[in-house]
Amino acid sequence: MHVLLTNDDGVGARGLAVMACAIEAWIAAAPAGEERAAVVVAPDRNYSGMSAAVGDVFARPTVSYRRYGVEGAPTLPAYGLDAPPALCAIMGALGAFDLVPDVIVSGINAGANVGRSVLHSGTVGAVLTGAQLGLSGIAVSVQWGEHVHYDTAAAVCVEVLDEVVAAPGRIVLNLNVPNLARDELRGVRRARVSTAGIVKAAGRRAGGPPLADEGELPLRLGSATPALGDVSDEEPDEDGALLAAGYATLTPLRGPHEDTDPGLDQTVDAALRLIDAHLRRT
Image (cartoon, rainbow, N blue to C red; front, side):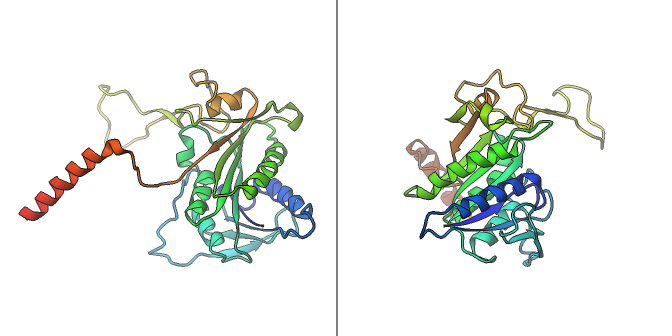
């Protein structure tokens, strides 16, 4: 079993180093006859909030890279790329670095990725990109705090990794872990993605004074931020609420795909007829 490890905080981030150490130990504990290996392919700097962006690869169809040493995991080959997380995932998935992976692990992200932030997260974007290339994956994030328990998140991820490896089909999981010591963790729960957003309000209210030709508009951040804000309006089974209650959360995700809802057929058919009629007139 071959693991591709990436992140969006950069190849030198503490969360990635802790995750690499845990994966190195997972490799060392392989049962007799089972091959395990891993490679780190991560951005060479912070690319948080990049979602699944790859950049303008048409204008620049090459990627600079450099070998790195990951603290505490000397046996894992590691590369830092001048590329966002999704492009790192693509290159790693295609076997550009040492091995062809079966599964991708992204993280440990410094801050929770719950609610609508999963759409914008580079951590999540990397595993969804890997899924487009046939890989199962885990995006792992830990709630931010004064002292971050990356070790707790790594321990939970490795246990989940065994299940992902054993799954009969491709699976993508979003794992969020509260900032607690392992013995303080209340357990792990399946969670629904909440409606919490990164940005709760922006700028001024409509109807206020007219905007100047240039300036700055303030952002008011919501509960889907690294430290996890007020989640009192969430349902008990939603990711932010469970995280705040001391549970690690698992949410299965699926990347872009055709919407096959039959209820859309009439709308799509009408749109096709209108477009076709317009094209015939021109």
